[in-house]
Image (cartoon, rainbow, N blue to C red; front, side, top):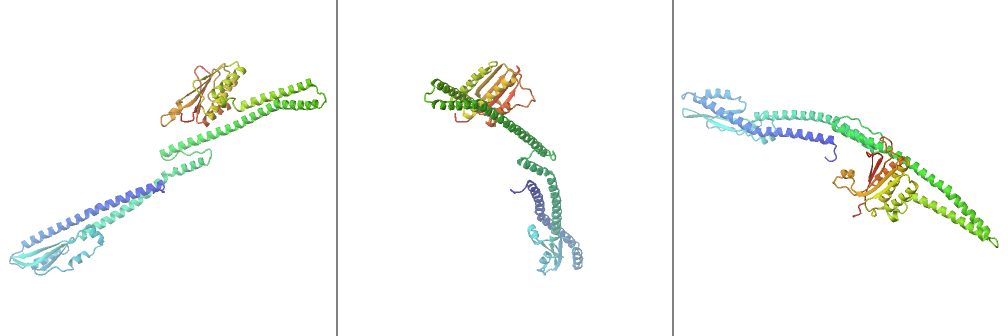
Length: 462
């Protein structure tokens, strides 16, 4: 029944159990039928024998027993479970007598008779009066009356049981149909979720198990809707940030690179004019070459700054710790009002490039938020390798993978609860989640804010 539904399986199971119960009951009736018929036949034969012997004992010895035997035959001729025949002393029972009894008025199937195994039994009682044998009384047990009753009882039992089985099975199927109706709603809800529909909610009806599943599905739908909404908001913010970054780069190129390039072009034209004279002014040539050199240097500084914004300086060549130290040194010059400290507890030279870049961007964004929003006078960034407690509790095998833990703490105004996180925090969280890490925000008792980001390390066999 591999391809059958749960409803069909339960229906088949209940039907098989009911039919098996009926078959067992009929088998029990059949097993008791043979002993019952044989016991009834033996009892009748013994009773007949005692009755005949008692009748013969009461006959006078000098009296003809024929009238008494006729009266006896008349009284015994209509017995229910036995047939009686009075024969002369030298007469034998007719050969067709047993077959006549076997095929007399009855509706019991032959297979049932053979299955029960209750054959007729014959008993001969000689009639002797005064030492003289007058006749023989032959009594043959007739089990077919009892077998007819048993067969009738079994037919009635089978008919009633079959009717009850059909009615009960119909009621069970109706009950199953009504009870399993929430399955269709669950199937429809899952199909809508798979199709990416929003606002998928199920009514909490049916059995408690279905209500629990529906509640879980509703929670899943709400979570998916929230994630979709957050993703849309994040994509919108990323697009806005991307456009803002492009505008900044375009503005820098227009405001700084444009004048430099114009200066180089104008100076180049002047140089061409000067060198076309038979005796060019050497002092003027030196001034023009110096102007080109200054413009070129300005362009190099501009491009160097743009590259630093797009790609951290020295991260790939030197590693994460030297790159962060260089970044902190530049911050110390531009933001001397904030006491900013970098603490690296372990050697980070073995970090892969993707994890190192994510860690660099997280620190860069977090410290930028300290400068812009916290109003803090002190900030501290700590990087260390270890096992994150939250990740450890989620591991099924009880062993958490090693992680890079980044803790950024300041003594500023802190982050208020219920306030939607800004683009910086969302970007940090997305970077951590993209690598399978996590981010959490805490409020230390001393004030300020603490952001802890954990990034899993690549399993490189070390």
